[in-house]
Length: 348
Image 1 (cartoon, rainbow, N blue to C red):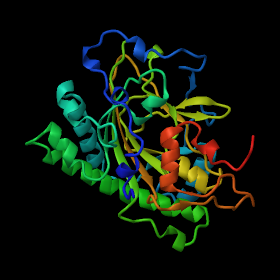
Image 2 (image 1 turned 120 degrees about the vertical axis):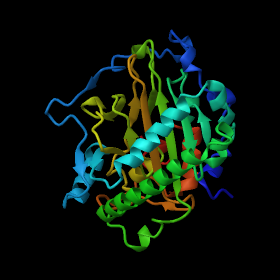
Image 3 (image 1 turned 30 degrees about the horizontal axis):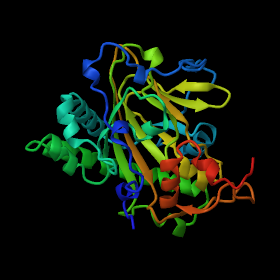
Image 4 (image 1 turned 60 degrees about the vertical axis):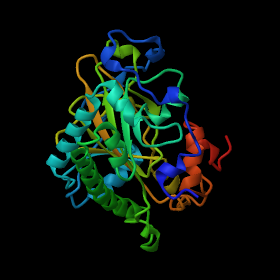
């Protein structure tokens, strides 16, 4: 029986052609495999115009931070967080290590290629198999220790990478625990119901992302629209635009990088737990021709055996059936965009 997140994905292997990225450094034109059909909203998005069309920036030291986070989760499913307690040096170091990794020749990176049934290492985004076109993206996934995969790339020089990534995971976990305490308090969950926080068997992962410069960015996609499975995701993004959140009534809204802030966006697990009170952030990443973009995502959720039951605070009717985290991961692994509707109790 699977007890870790990486083990949970073993039952849902991918074909290697959905794992091996292109060698973007050798390309001068956009391959047809990466040319997405253009729709009216493909690159149309709203920027901050003073009318409330940008995700809120919340100061974690604000006495009203918990209530502001609740409002942001309801309206946007996302917010930017400042005074979050993560030293700037920790974030800068992890971004530098991501740059060092992705700058390596393709044959070096492929030494740590994710296996068909694996969940860690180098490769395309796991969601790639659900889309007819490929994304302009390379990734490196860490679950637990990064050392096994790092040794394949740097047999004699992996210690720095491992130490920096492990420290980043520890710091992110502490921040995630603070945010979870606030969010579960908002949902009126008892102290017993918060007992899983701090567990050694959490569903957590770090994802390093690289979006190279693209010769035809208007026809490409960095990361296709999707929601995360997590309770929430904490994201560091380099100072280059690209991330967009979808908001009903506003369309795709750019999440502009602000120095020393982290982006937090909600996932499916929180959406289910809150009985749809909190949104799950539909998001995507666009690319550009002039600047490379890097990001580091930390995914956080309860242990695999945690049973998700919608909380009936605002309505007496559950919108989703109860199920374990492991079962939901399995549903999402085979039904990316339909997972929530497959566990919905509301018949359309």
